[in-house]
Amino acid sequence: MPIEQRGVDTIPEEERTSGPRDLISILLGSNLCLGVIVFGWLPPSFGLGLWPSVTAIVTGTVVGIAFTAPLALVSLRTATNLSTSSGAQFGVRGRLVGSVVGLLLSLGYTALTLWIGGDVMVGALSRLTGLPDTGVSRAVMYGALAACTVVAAVFGYRLLLRMSKILSVGMVVLLAVGVFAYAPDFTAAAPPETAYLLGSFWPTWLLAAVAAGLSGPVAFITLLGDYTRYISPARHDSRKVLRSTALGLLVGLLVPQLFGTYTALAARAGGEYAGPLVDASPFWYLVPLLVAAAAGSVGNAGLMLYSMGLDLDAIVPRATRTTATLVAAAVATAFVFVGSFEWDVQSAMTSFVLLLTALGTPWAVITLIGYARCRGTYDADALQVFNRRSVGGIYWYRGGWNPAATASWAIGAGVGLLAVATPFYEGPLLALTGGVDCSFVLSGLVGGLAYTALTRRKAAVPAPAAADAADEPVAA
Image (tube, rainbow, N blue to C red; front, side, top):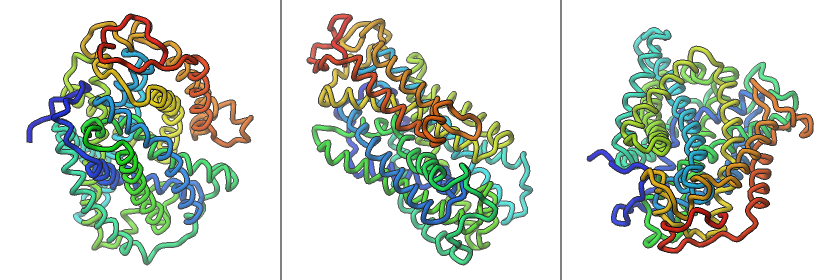
């Protein structure tokens, strides 16, 4: 299989051969991994039992999908990734906001997947072979997983799609077997000596809904376009693509996360997940657990690293996608080492998802408003101006930036950060929200309202010759 040569350039129609079924496969197969499973552990670690954990995860996931899934339609129309597509609203240089947000999201989730996957693999091998569970053995495992991930990401979309199709079947089988493996120890009660993280039920439940449920779909706000840009709108209806995106996210996120909740309760995993998961496993399930940790981690981290390469390629157009992917892999692996040896996994995960949700939500809202205004009609050639290192076009705005969109994102993100509640930092607006983290709602609402107020004029629908338009376009 040849290495993919496409970066963030426009995908030609003849290469857009994927379909909605491929979209479901990649969203299902790539998420059946410990990096997603571990989010199901968060609600029990916050002090919630079975049904509060399940309702928090399901509610957050459904709300997140309703907000996130429509973004898949943007790249269906532009034939490039979502960060580049956001240049229609932010400007061809202002789209760097989306590239940075996407890079941070992918970086964090890649590091988390390698971290949890490596820890479980070392723990399983320790019980199977007597391998010492030390910092050195974990470092070697992180490096091995990272190397395999790089290979998958460098070869690109086609290889990752094939892997996802295999994983969507194989991992479901392994997780189904895992349900029987942990059944004897299962209990619906929260782990022992685990009090409500925020002191009472409802604030803790809302935190779980955001950190464990909502964060899953939000992780894809810049990723969905990496897959739908290979689907042709001439051959596949937008509504079918939207339904496939929603279905892929729903099944692909709920199956692993609910398995994480189930195993966390069975393993009495309060302050840590990987160690108790391995310790509670019957000996016969250690090999399937080892396979699940290895294969699932490479599949999920491969897709995240692939997206990181595209975002870095968008930030530095002179770099090739392969070079950008290698650089991104090195940075992600460095984060794994720092996280494993310096941070508490629960605090690190919670802080990461809440902060990135506050930063990413207003960007996604502005991009969706732009899609609705232009009715899905974009000038694909004008979106590539920055990549060609040229100037002009309908999305040039002022020096390549749309001040209204950029300011709206900054205002929304700023409000979100002021309203966030993490183990490391609590924003001053929490005093006005009763201590409940409303950063997701406030950041998206404020960012969207600011953008609407600053761009009251109706968006222009690009004409075929729009790439040669004047320097000042109508606000989109």
